[in-house]
Length: 198
Image (cartoon, rainbow, N blue to C red; front, side, top):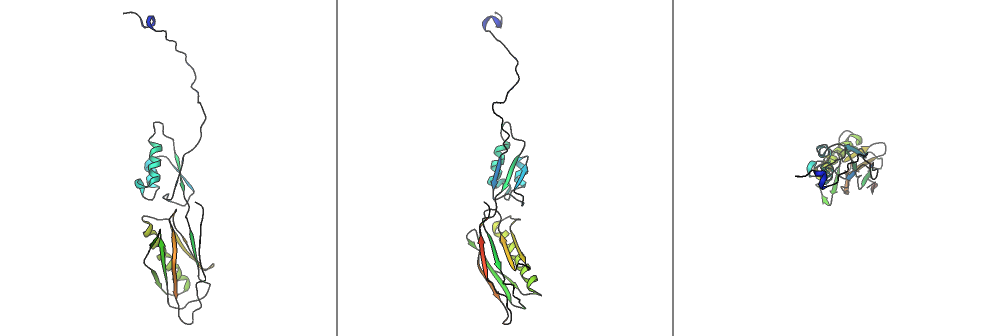
């Protein structure tokens, strides 16, 4: 048998590796299931993505992150972007006063009407509407399922209950009813829904 170099001519030249095109891009995965209030989060693994998402490994954003980290040469990290609420609803109480009665709200979340949330009057309008906002928040988060970010806040100074559903979830106030005493002056003047960043 002859030598290898008698059959083929092999020339080996050592050169420095080169990059055909520089790419410093970071993959951004945007969706409504990102937990937390930051616009973006840095995620270094698929398991970290699952922990940062409403729905965990069942969230579609997780599947995108899993694809990214399953590559032969995975990135060091990706970014999860928060898709902002599709609507914000404000209820204005007109700044009036109430000494008794109750307040009741019906929400429609993602097209499904929820049971009315009713709060009986307590020591003051502030305590009653604060408690009512807290009850609405529980109902909203339960309807979305596993949500810990949707917010419902009553602010006495601006006389408003502001409802901010998480992500692209839709929340519409279909009715808001005050049942006051005859001498009370509190009344609902506005219910406004506005779009925010998507």
